[in-house]
Image (cartoon, rainbow, N blue to C red; front, side):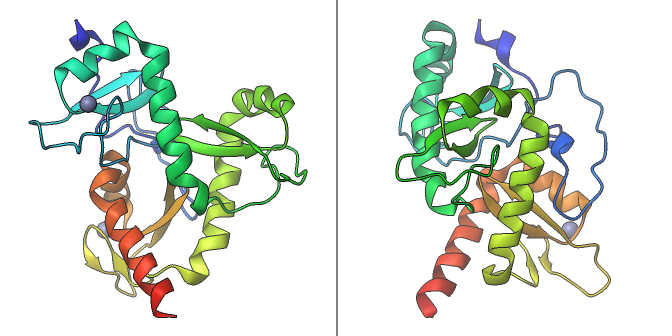
Length: 221
Ligand SMILES: [Zn+2]
Ligand SMILES: [Zn+2]
């Protein structure tokens, strides 16, 4: 039964990771997925657009948040877990590569060279200089995640298109406690903690908006 894997993946997603410019709060949770929430608009096991075959199913497997188009696809995480994770990894590598902020390894600082090792941890792409860096990445993933968050914000904040717009709430006002957070190697600026929780819980609702705004800004220049 797939229900066994169904965990409420709403609030706890990645709150433990904090944000670039905020003190992380400790949300109590039984077994939260680690890393970023599932953010792709398509199913983790096929290329179906989520929502087109009924309500998408949220599943946490191996500590990772995933979403599926149908129960049949969700069941595959049990019958072919390696296949499903590899499929989702490949999609996320292709999706995040162009957003990756560094040409040096996040683990060692060594230049990535022409053929970096690409690893997905908690739905996030990490690019490494060699296979030897995979173990240290996994061992210190929380620290390395935070380091990558900072690198993403540093690289993207100057050209971020929605400087004064929160994707959840609208205008960011002078009194707001603005937060820059990172999902899928994209910086997202929100107006408050509550909106951060919304974005982390359902990044797929907001990332498209950010990508569109950033693309439009780049094309306008
Ligand atoms: Zn599917
Ligand atoms: Zn807000």
